[in-house]
Image (cartoon, rainbow, N blue to C red; front, top):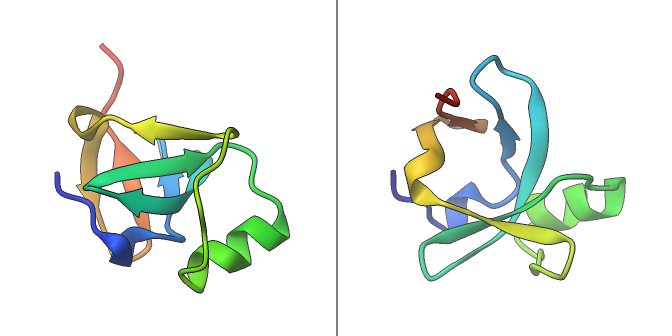
Length: 78
């Protein structure tokens, strides 16, 4: 799956739909996820003002199952 800046602010959910974080920034096709976003982080990301920091994790493209208008769903762990 290919992520873009339009995906900033989307929830990231596991294969069962449980929210595990939010995309704070997309840089060079890589989504950075904050696993414990506060309200400020959430608002900043939705406005496109997010910047990845030391609390954010790069999301491997191979882990993404689907991308919808509202969320990025991860593949089921095998």
